[in-house]
Length: 281
Length: 327
Image (cartoon, rainbow over all chains, first blue to last red):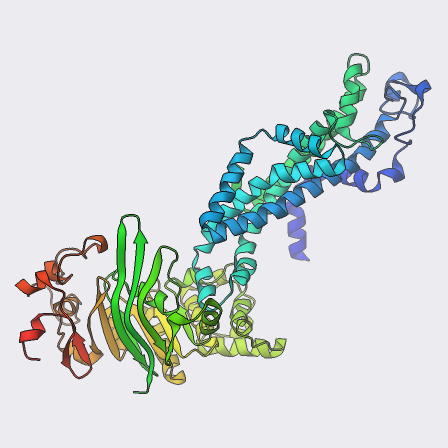
């Protein structure tokens, strides 16, 4: 209990305050969104935030060009963002950690080929790769997840490989071998616990980037498709009205910023907690 | 002494580097009987550790390879075993204690977890309470005070000596028949070192296992071992019973090593030192590798490597000096 309290006191309050609402919106958005986010009502189109015009609290953040409530759309947009970025980052992590582990542990030719592959991919601009993949797969939720997984796995592979290389040299691994451990057991029991921290840190730090990438893809029209709501998509639709209806791009923009900031703060905190050596990432 | 437990015959382990072949172990032969302690002595980089790694077949591949010889363990040639058979032998029949006790334990697991791992690894699945009891028992044997209270401790909560003893506990947990200790005391201070050696000796006598003690400290060998093997540049230069080798070393290298030991009660103006440097493996002198540093060097030493000459019963030395001398 005491230990629990101590951990609780050290939690990153800012990051949690920023991320918690996004999480709640993503999970239970339907329950408290004031309006149907996809209901089109042309007679209400392009209304300014109601507290500015003194029209009460019906459309707090205004409506878009089709008369849809911006607040409801921002709330519901959290879901696709969360699904895409979390699943994408987890997929990337699993692939990257596995490949990094084997690459570092087996070494030799396998390692060489994998690492050149990583280099090749890293020399390609992420957004270009993303465009290519989603263009080939057809836009949609799955495409964005695949894009995130493929763009992000290399970072895990590199870091995990490096850590594996150094851990496998350490005496307790030699000792385990002398005791008669199989390679699988050594990997699972002796190496994974030492590299998993870095992978978790990278994952949290990538979460922010994943949200941005998702928004960028949606903006370019390659992300999730209507009627599913996404923040990037909202900004894309709003760009025609930027001069007349500032609230359209502003609010989804702020949400993206808050989410990315929260994720990065959380990642920084976790990194300092788990492994201060990773500062440069 | 009992029957031969380990017989190494003409073992050759070479490292293949870009600069050339390093013959780290070059035709080494020795044996260990049951219940006997053998000391392997030599300067840094003379192939002691490589010899040990070869016995458990854990030489750092692919750079190093065992290229020849035989390692007979209880009559079985270990060099013909495949990897899964070797895994069965390692930890079970042959175990090893590594140099640095501070590094040999995994920092993320508790002591209890790591010691019980040894029982689990070799198919001895036991119910929890029995397992705990076993672990406590083996830790008590290596004299960890109040072992049952320390099972949940992590390695960093143990002192260096305790960690080394824990490693020893893990080594004897599988009741091995041969224990290889590769400079087990280099990172311990002298009092702890002494305790640990006594413990090692005690365990060895209790279980009647064979012990190979690798060290560069002749004092340790005198205290712990029955027989000694002196290595120089990948080859064995002298072997024999500890008291007799210490009493009258046959090889000039052994003699020089013994002279370099400080003695209590003797006033040294300056401690004896062996001139020159250990030879580089890629550039070994022709003939006997020791001749550039030998004070008894003869013409033939520069041309040909000396074979092993018997000195007396069970004692051998590779030195030309012995050929024409009193054999």
